[in-house]
Length: 228
Image (cartoon, rainbow, N blue to C red):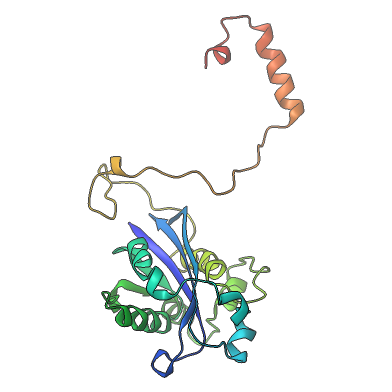
């Protein structure tokens, strides 16, 4: 099962009054596990940035001036998300903006049912409690210390962790099926796991590695480790 955790930054609250998207960030999940594949794009909104919006995400006119317009990246964005479920915090806001931008380009709209709203999930699980992304990070002990300003890709990465907690924990689904299906409906041979974006630190110390090498050397040329 392929899902895309998604976030946007904008110039304001209403695309119908002239507000535009200025950043899109997305993280791919396969079977509720991050694959390391992401989409990130800054966008020239073709208008000035209101001070209120700048205080939220820190993306100003000078920075965005040389970035591509949505018309130049809209199709690539659609190609990335495909028909995956879109995991979004307050999905109505982001879908509203994305569909406005896509409509102006004459591209297909994103169906509302394609979105999974983590804000709605959080409110159902914890009625009456704060359900902002920051509040959920505190609830699940997720480190968001690098989130001094809103950023679409960083927020997507954090939201991916929050989403996995909301649906029952960070462990992946148990692979009980003998024939896995990917997003295109083909067999498991079409999909391979990707390397971690940041390799895990080795758990073997230099002293332990040296001791093991000395042990293997004593076993002679037929030692199993020398045949690997």
